[in-house]
Length: 320
Ligand code: PAF
Image 1 (tube, rainbow, N blue to C red):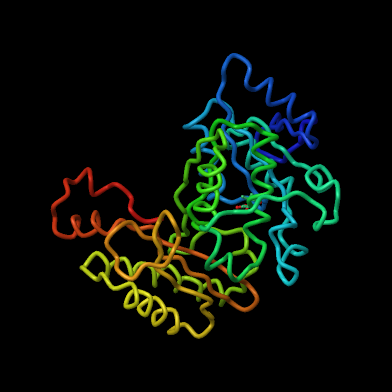
Image 2 (image 1 turned 180 degrees about the vertical axis):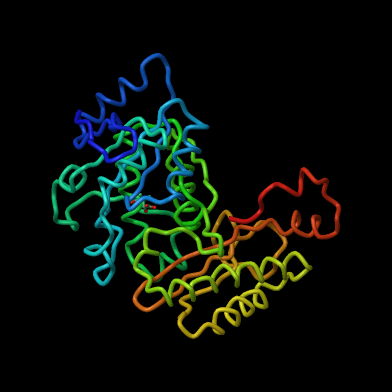
């Protein structure tokens, strides 16, 4: 095991870091000694406060926390940003050391992909949750995600794994994978962390020019407007979709890719909004593609609007 030397205010800060499978297994066995539960947060690095909140959540559900950083080539399409995806391992390690991470797994590509011929490799086929939206627009993306997540689960062998609600469809795909393949891991979902003006934190926000950064707030504003409409009794998914589209169209620097209303579990589009739904959207700001969503429980929202919930129940978050 190497100690990743990190720049930090604390002069002794260092983070135990492993880069290959054998060292990982040994380090995890040591962490697990005495019956400790392992929590796992898989990431692609370029960490921000959203990732750190997932580490914090993992700490609440487990005794030891392992984080992986791996920019997974198989989930990027040929015209996507694999080459320019931000890679900041030193800064990431410093953040993780201060966030209570016990072990960093930082595999070289050949550890996970010893055979670079993608066509020859075994892969994991995701289920129906991967079909629409991101899955339709980014062919092979969720296959790449499902495959690397399965590899990481087998290597890290966590009791609990934490994924962010920001990537709501990815979360649905992983939950289905774990359910359908009986993977022995509990999936915990972490809420989306937002800037004060509503922009969801994302590693890709750093691509935005200042004017694009400002324009990007229209995404969360559109979601807030849609949530208000649903709270006030709107049940037509088509009308909510149009509201999202209209709000985003008012910002000329943003080109909407999609705005949908889908069932929270299956991720299939719904016509009527009665049960838990997700409102996922994707949009381009220049070359940068951002995604965001709200997960909503319409019944709880409407009960809140009619004052039927107690103050404590009102505090239960119903949006990602
Ligand atoms: O959400 C991410 O950062 C990635 O999709 C994941 C889950 C680490 C798989 O590469």
